[in-house]
Image 1 (cartoon, rainbow, N blue to C red):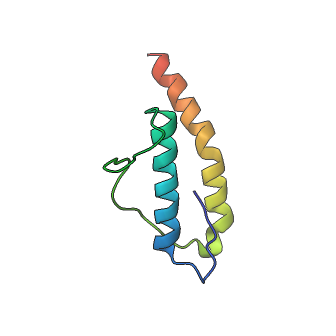
Image 2 (cartoon, rainbow, N blue to C red):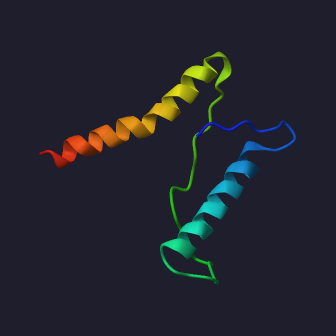
Image 3 (cartoon, rainbow, N blue to C red):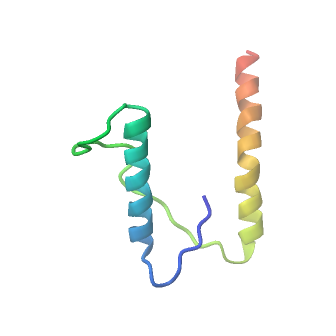
Length: 80
């Protein structure tokens, strides 16, 4: 995922918000819960962040092409 975060927001705040919202969404859609999410845990505790700099277009192309590469690998697994 490639994000552009404005300087007034901290990286940890944005990542925490995204992880929290995605965990709630997964609990609702997969586990069927509508309320009381206390004690729920999903995903890893940490995260990795890096700056892109001059290679932004290359990173975006990699992210864009990743789904196609994953589908190709999945097809190879089914062929075995």
